[in-house]
Image 1 (cartoon, rainbow, N blue to C red):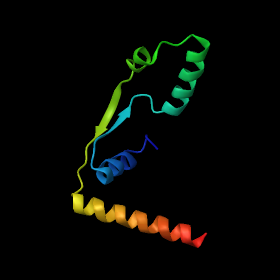
Image 2: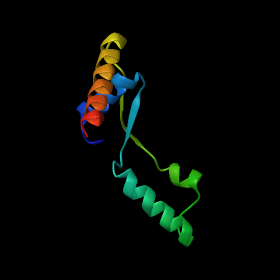
Image 3: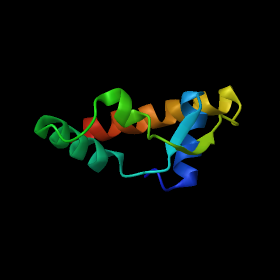
Image 4: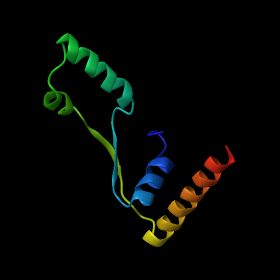
Length: 86
């Protein structure tokens, strides 16, 4: 998901806040590896580990807030209709 510029921009627009994409996009796997390595005593503490985090790109909101609110409301409506149908 993080590899998609469209998705990252859409999230920034809908939430109205910047979204940072790290250089390493497989952060779930990286986090799991860090937890296992930390438990085994081979990884540094969290502060040292996070010091290696590098920014690939920042996506800043560019959609007018009224448009973002309308899209968010549409998404909420779609989720509600889906839950009712099941």
